Image 1 (cartoon, protein in one colour):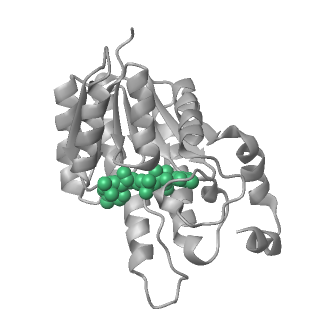
Image 2 (tube, rainbow, N blue to C red):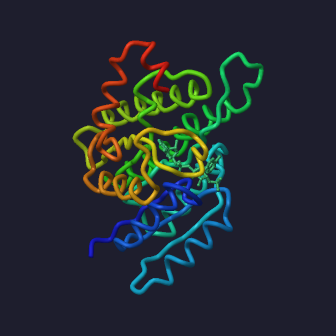
Length: 248
Ligand SMILES: NC(=O)c1ccc[n+]([C@@H]2O[C@H](COP(=O)([O-])OP(=O)(O)OC[C@H]3O[C@@H](n4cnc5c(N)ncnc54)[C@H](OP(=O)(O)O)[C@@H]3O)[C@@H](O)[C@H]2O)c1
């Protein structure tokens, strides 16, 4: 079996936890990080109890702590003897209408979903450049395709920024052994969107399977699940504003 060492941020719940399970089932060695270490440790214990389980290491990491990101990512890489893939997945979904006088959630979303992704990518790309290989996976959203109103305005803007960032990184490493993959999920039921009305939503297991299969293909960009989001994402870009308002 080919040795694959994957670091996942935000692995304590939802899509990150699900991807950890899927990659572990494929025999990948894993480095799992998040703030809730009790959940990471329980997950690691479960994954390593399986027959022929590969190594799983965990670490506490708040991705908005730039210094901690710069220290913890290379420490985990050293523990595993290198990293083949880093999945920048940690994210939050809070938001308020801009101008409501309550900017805290919007600022936290921008810092976690965009600024912190730059710090995570910096740490990952430094390792990949030294190795001459690696796959950086940035988890964006279909929300990156269009400016959205109300509670989604900053979330969509942060994901659009992350999408453009991914393209710039791809231009940087074009023709090298380093691959940059953007995964744009549609609606997948997790803690992030609990209670939200979501058309075409799938359960976490279905969504995670689509993400893992896409990541393994190493594309530049993939909507997950592919249907209907590979049609709706590009369509969202072309819709007149009243229709976007009505749908989102
Ligand atoms: N679910 C969807 O429909 C959907 C759609 C499009 C995009 N996405 C994206 O997919 C990613 C995962 O979301 P999810 O649905 O799995 O949500 P989730 O179940 O709420 O999981 C979010 C994860 O991010 C971690 N996280 C949040 N803030 C963090 C911080 N400051 N430092 C470190 N870790 C942090 C959380 O861990 P701790 O709290 O333990 O730190 C948790 O493990 C996000 O980037 C989200 O924007 C999700």
